[in-house]
Length: 322
Image (cartoon, rainbow, N blue to C red; front, side, top):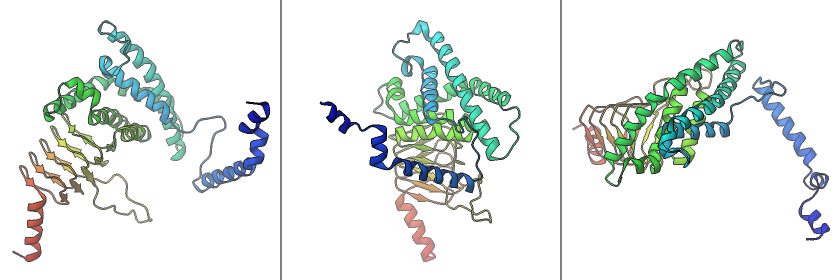
């Protein structure tokens, strides 16, 4: 390529500015940012990062997966005799990285809620210490999820296959991490961790959802579990199941009330088949089975078997008055 061809293919900064009118576009974008910040009463401290980083949290989650399951989700260089060394080094690195992200969220919250940013560093250290101490229990919960998947899927040949390959398990690793962050009052970091799994698996679990042990999502794509859902032990869901809200009450000023219990409660030993949609603060009684593609907005007692056919029959009876 001649010098002239290189110049044509890769225009200089000044050439690009002329070609794309970048000065005007940059100025207009600056104006748009200023308008947004003014409308939302936002101020930016010079030289400071305002938000946690999605990319950094992705690295933290990958490191935590490795620390939780070093021989299966850690790097190939890890061997049995070096597990503890790898886990210790990895946790020291990723927890310190997490600490900085926690500080960023706490500072963001203090600015957003116009709170005095006192004791942020001390609180951040306390939160990360609490999170770290929860990891052994989190590992035990995940072990129960892996076993549930292995026992619940006749196609699974080993627990190792389940851990390495099943999207529902990957989603639950992220969820159990995210839920702990949510409990520690870090909703932004928790939501980032949840959305990383959503992007990887197509499974959308809000970090606020409470999920008991031995939980199995088979296939997984399209599953949605809302913020205030409560799921008991040994529950199994199939793909495209929704545990959602039926309505969204207002707060009197045009917005929505936040934090109200609005998602289903699913008791122990329930199976919900593909495509079922359960909406509102209803209770699915222990040991119930909800069939595929059922639309359910009412509670059902323990031991129920709800299918499209019997749901339609009940509706017909109500409408006909029989």
